[in-house]
Image 1 (cartoon, rainbow, N blue to C red):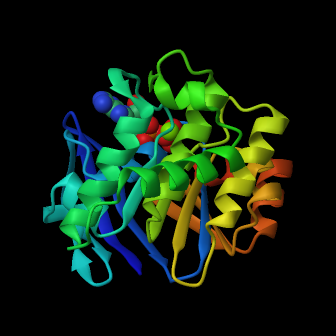
Image 2: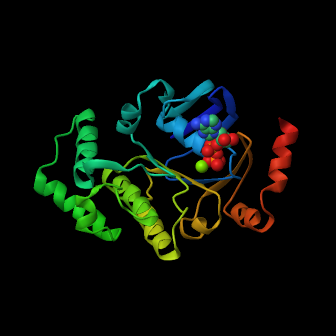
Length: 252
Ligand SMILES: Nc1ncnc2c1ncn2[C@@H]1O[C@H](COP(=O)(O)OP(=O)(O)O)[C@@H](O)[C@H]1O
Ligand SMILES: [Mg+2]
C-alpha cells in the first residue's frame, strides 16, 4: 500500500531525510522508532504534504501513485491521515463543524453524498463516546483549551470518522498519562483491519505494549538503519539508541 523509495527531504536548505526506504503492506502496523531529531516528524510531514518540507529525490507511492505531486487534501481524499505530534488549535471553528466539513469534503471528492445532520451526529457521538470525548469538547473550538491528552484523543476521533486507509501517527503517546494512553491505543486498535495500514511513530516502547506492531524500524539520521519484529522495540528500550546513532554516523 505504501512504498517510500530513496526519499531525500530538505527543510530550510538542510538535508533531513537521506535516502529513506519503507514498504508497508495492507493490514500491517509498522512502528518507526528513533532518537529525537532523527527525522521522524519530517517523514510524517512530507507524507502529508506540509509546505516547506521538500522532497529533492525519491518518491512516496500510495497504491502505486506518487503522492508527492498531490496537494494535501488530495492525499487525504486518497485515504492518507496524519495524527500530529503537536495538534494545532483552531479558534472559532467548533470541533463538530471541523469534523463534519472534513468528512463531507472527502466524501465529495470520492463521489459520495454528504451525510445528513442526524446521520453525522450519530456517527460522531458514537465515535466520541468510545474515546471519552464529551459533547462540550465537540462544541468548543478545535483543540482550544484541550489538555494534551484531549488533543491526542481528538486526533484519533478524526481518524475514526474519516476511516483513512493509511494512518500515520506521530508520537501520539507523548504527553499522555497511562489512562489516556490506553484510551488512545484502544481507539487505534479498533481501526486495525485487513484493508488499512498504519505507521506508528514513537520515541518510546511504551506505546507498543498497547499497539503491538508487525514490524519495527529504527530511524537514525534520516535513514532506516534497522528493521525487525516487535522484539526490536524491547531491545531499544533496554539498550537505547546510541549504537544506531553511531552506525548511521559511519554510513553518512
Ligand atoms: N522547520 C524546520 N527548520 C529547520 N530545521 C528543522 C525544521 N524541522 C525540523 N528540522 C530539523 O530536522 C531534524 C529532524 O527533525 P524531526 O523530523 O522533527 O525529528 P524527530 O521527529 O525525529 O524528533 C532536526 O535536526 C530538526 O532540527
Ligand atoms: Mg517528532
